[in-house]
Image 1: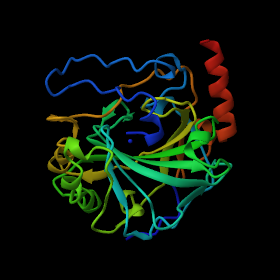
Image 2: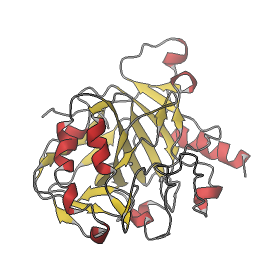
Image 3: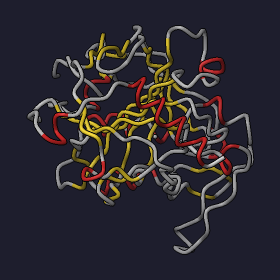
Image 4: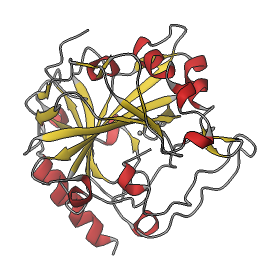
Amino acid sequence: MHFVTFSILVCCSLGLSWAAGWNYPDLENNKDAPFPSWGGLCDSGKRQSPINLEAKWALKGKFDKLKFKNYDDEQKNLDMVNNGHSVQMNHFNDDMVLQGGGLGHEYELEQIHLHWWSEHTINSVRYPLEVHMVHRNRLYPNMTVATSFKDGIVVVGVLFHVSNSPNAAIGSIIKNLDDVQAYSRVNKPVTVANSLAVSDLMPQTLGSYYTYAGSLTTPSCAESVIWIVLTETLPVTLEQVNEFKKIEYSSGKQLYNNYRFLQTINNRVVVLVDSDHRTGGAAGRTASFGLILLLAMAAQKLFL
């Protein structure tokens, strides 16, 4: 198990109560199925997520290292639930806190969930799996309050590439899927039988990531998220990914895919943070999250 000193997708369960009937297109039976309208801010917002992350268009940034407290601790009594839109895990043994980098506050890990086929793409490449680690700004007492503020939530995205070698951490999650797979088990949490360290779901080398101001990727699509998407990906087999596709969201209907289609950037600032980049030219430019939010809000006004 590696020691993490630096940085790290159905979104928050609070979004599920906003529109119980929302869903994803059935791409298994119709690859050309249109993405359904979710309404509200999901359709009208100007800082929506996910987006395509392009290195050539990103502003190069340099921050202090992100710090992850207690992410190496074994979580022995995690709750896992099929919420009808993803598999989610929460109820951690210890408070896990993310801070540093360009973040102005401490952020506490609230839950982890997965998206089969990644929501974000990097240089227009979509990966088979994306893990989202959802954090709440500790200034705010709960997730509901946090979604009302532009700095309320940090979501760390970890993408997985296809490999012939199974991923051990993903495998430990899969071992418990049978207990939540059926539609009759929706919103009925179970205790994970085996322990898992959150750091096992992150790369050992965390030197580079994209960050931008965005939204939840499920209803209510609140524009309250600072995204941190790691550029280094982890291995996973297609056989492992296919296990998640057995999750049922309705009686006899499996959740073949649960990723949202790409959103318009709308002139938002996307920063590529690379601890190894050299100063000079574009690589020497820096940005703070305050600047990111300011420019994102200014761009949003242009489209109102």
